[in-house]
Length: 326
Image (cartoon, rainbow, N blue to C red; front, side, top):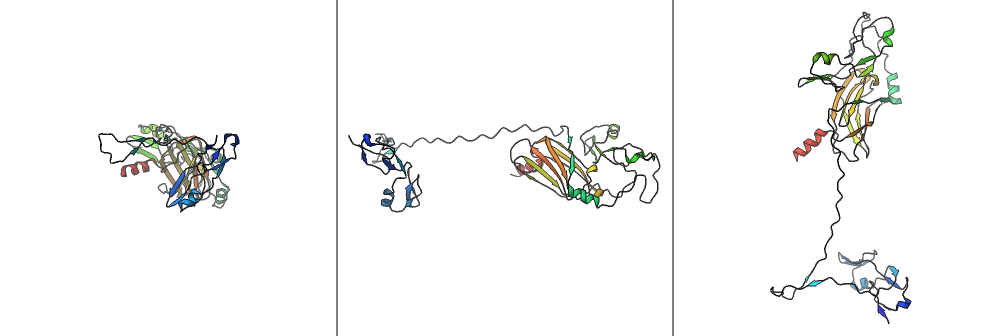
């Protein structure tokens, strides 16, 4: 007995005895009518004329299909209501795709968590720039050529070393605070570290957080209120802050970071200026995977994101301002 194939664009009669994978040439897709063009969703051919559309040869080979497609259910209107000869077609239920849930955000750590000082590496460009600077003044002398008196206290903030004059001062390590003293709401601390105290004596007794060379004369160089431009960019995994401080002195720079904050005190321009800054970060960083690199024209702080997400801004306060303005 011969059967009729119900595959799109076929309609031929066939016998099951001769039905194989090459018997039927058909369109597995559905008709597409858009902007007066007609075609099948399974192939790119489009025609304006309906006859040409009906004569498009199939794009797939397979077995003939004897099963008649099921028509959508038609529901007539109630007898109590005037139908006017109009029937309603019950629409097929539409299944909305499941929305992807946003990944769980990490809880934001407290800004007062302990800070970690990051090691600073120097590039070859910085080493070359430093080699061109005039040699620093010898320890134990002043700009007028006067000799420093033994017992003179080191001028670096927080250092309690006294000049001995026996030649050992060149090799003694200076432990000092490169930042500035901060007095806020009854608390006292250095901008370069986070050891807050309400007692002034305890504040003065805090040991330095950075190492360098002793300075026994009042240097004309330091402009501690000077700032310089900085910018930032991000990749999928890292956030990089570029501080455009020319010729930074690595031994007198300090960069500290905790999961949501970074503080830096950068001595630059060959030692003539200091730039102190605290940035509350918009996101969370992995303190264990952060580094600092000093070049001749800038100092870069590279911090790994704790969450793989894009930051809207570098500073947390900027996001708050945007949300409040909206």
